[in-house]
Image (cartoon, rainbow, N blue to C red; front, side):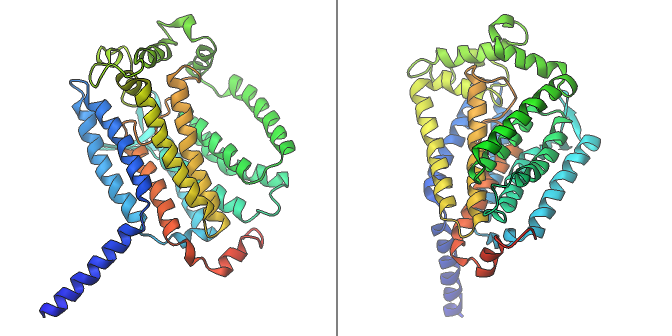
Length: 388
């Protein structure tokens, strides 16, 4: 009996050890300091401990999800029917959100269940990565044909329009950037890129006159000249640039960021967390933060390049684009180079659903990396055999 218990414990111990051994600890060692920096920024200002406490709970859930997903064999995602079903669920959730979602700050973007709120679009970004990776992987040889670019645009456009109707301009921008990035890494020709750019210009004109709300137009105009209305529409961008610049070389110290502490910097825990961090930690802290993000992106790309199939390669590249696009947009709007769109900083901004989505993306990549040697030959071959 004792021998049997000892044997079971040994087997279970080996399983746990094997599970932990398959995790990319370089990613983990880069992700945790980024998340920690966000938590410190939230907790460093008196009276805002509720952000810190809620984020700790979401972080705990997200880390558990990451480790569980890293143990999953995601070969089932190579099947078209599974990916299409996931895409359909995402579309349905966004449609239902327009009818039954909770309106917060003028945007119907949230499902609210008591004290818990959830933003489906955070996962729709990953679903778009998945559906595009599947579509392009099956048409890798003939990707130069422009019809495949427009078919892929139908997938992205469906999510894009549903998100704009909420309205959530920031998430719509990220969806567009994910589509654009994935079409480019999939092998789009320069000629087709120019055609798409021309079409985008035409769509931009259409959206300006028939889709964008007045406040969205004002944000774009404020981006062109933010100092023209520093007490009005340009206030957020102006205060953000002051916060970043006032951090100097080494920052003002944790809890001593005057822009955030004195409430000059709005939404410092979400839309302007980078500015709040830069004010407290300075240029040196920002360089370290960007280096950590660089490590995360490097490991995602390294895992992608060793994918067993085109789908897994493209999915990994798409996840890298998912992170990079949000990092660029968030930091760009915090330093006055891009319009304020309300885009969170991955792994760092306050918010449970987007933090969970970030860890989900990393977990799926980790799971694919663990089982990449187990690719079925028939599934690899089927990537080149047509539209099924």
